[in-house]
Image (cartoon, rainbow, N blue to C red; front, side, top):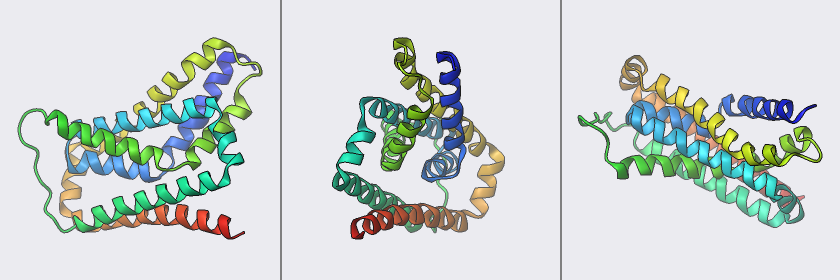
Length: 213
């Protein structure tokens, strides 16, 4: 397989993973439908940056480090799981609050930065993603990999993940989904909180189960 074909194969595999439902999808879609399109796009960029960081860490050998230091891996999984459960608690707590309308004009830079940072932290809170990236790279990167491929891989991952979540943000910030959400806000928020909490609980459970073995 040529280096170019390897790049497209890697991006295709990662796109399939990004499109699968998970905490990232829940967060971006909810941010777009509850706040605004601009907030959803900021969250999409945060997800893209988190994915690019995972790509860089995988190339730098984080996967090997996690395999050689199981205690570190367990600590990261527990921390990530607890963070997702905290986000779930915040969503559940605000489920009964009315949907706040956006003021006219562009959102403040600080508010957009919070949406960006929340998305970035959510993306990097799951260390299993680093293992997925490492596995995909190990399976599909040519040996030896040319320098240009290593140089473009992280930016390509950023564009791929950001692009997917931009589509999610655009779809969920449209008038139709926002109107539907406004009518069913409490139920939708509680369902989103349950999904986020279950994913966090699964991370913690897997970590504790592995530690007990």
